[in-house]
Image 1: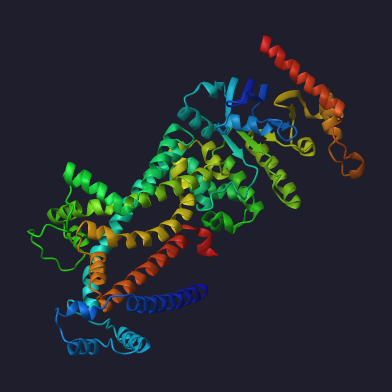
Image 2 (image 1 turned 90 degrees about the horizontal axis):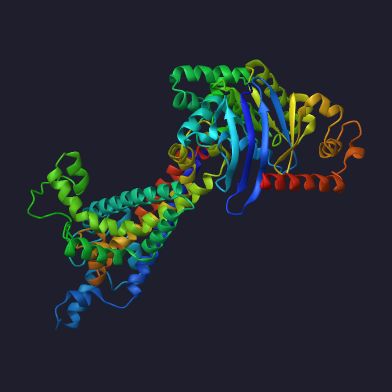
Length: 290
Length: 336
């Protein structure tokens, strides 16, 4: 049984009827890492936001289910849904520079969920925070816990956000392009850290990224999105050996390779785009009739 | 080190500001038409009397000379003698200051409470009919000046539905054995509800009149910055932790959204203190503002100068407090 199961999830822009997600289905088993890739606007971040209940107000879910440990989040009353998400899932956000509250100390931002939502004793939560900072290789955890975000570097803040995401031992973590906003030299370390933490804690991880290189290193499974529709859902290894879908293949071909950077910088061909668009339209039509 | 330099710089600019205010006031009230001596003497006084009195108050000397004499006195704590009451200006002014400070602070508290509730409610129900209603209410509150609110409130709660007192500061028949002139603070500290309830009954309408426009500004600006803050990543992250809307607004958004509002409140509070001049007159409230109007009517030059200087001191003090609060609330400045 998968820890996270999404079935036929559809979402649209309120009042405009513009579909943002088209009957998306995917599963993440306990302890498994699934990559979610696609171009900008394909809806990959939208899926992560839908799971965590943080969709923008302008977006409405129009159908489908999000099962977290067998319970459909969309059927729960808001307060109950929030607590359930807070207790069993977490987010590693994209930009560490904006994801920490500038007027609160780091310590409180790690322990708040443990104390307020899970009802831990403050001392226990603080001990846990120290332990977590050590785990993400932050020296002087005591000082860092008392610091404000602006006193720390971007890489350091991302480590803190990773530590915070693992604080409540969630069963699922959504990592929303967690390395995109970082310095290239820091990216690798952070990626390794997320991998190590995931492996140690056995957390299911949904890794949202546009970087297939990252997927090949971190993930076991992979969903490729185009225009809010899953065009390929597969294991990572066979995918890199030879993707089934033409769009996935073109996306893979468009990924720069370190061996030959200039030669491989090619856009997804027009013909492929047209084909996948037709496919999306067909699927919409079928869903409309069904 | 940096802090000391900042404080010194601040004191220097404050001194320059006060000197500038003193010069301008001194010159302006002597240049505008109206002669205090003529007001003091009975009709039919001889030219000789006029000259004698003019010389007595030093008004026969040149303007720079007059200023130097006055400024020299000020440096010794002597602000001159009121022409009408023949009492030291400093004593008169300090006697009335507490009444005006209490009124202004009460108005500020009311404005912050109303504005805060309005902003939080508007943020909570943003992009809905409630927010639109709040915007309209704010617009109305803002477009009516404080003295007109004073008249409206007198009509509503003093005449049609007389639940508040509309004249004076306190009922004179009460046992008025105050040690200080901070009647409200003192009666609260001494645990005398008979006194402070009466004071509040007198002060509520004038302070509300002063507070309404400011509360609309606070409500509007704070709501706007709260709404912008609500989109930020750390607010979203807090939602994923399981927190609901109220907590997210109060703990994550408010401390960061409050800074622009604070600067604005500082500036607007000085306007509010300026507004006490007319509001005190309207409610016959015996404060500095009422004293100022009497002084202007009577061409009581030393008294006008003293009052204006005191207002200038209050304004700079308010700005200083705002800057300090800003540093306290913004960790980036505290450590900077």
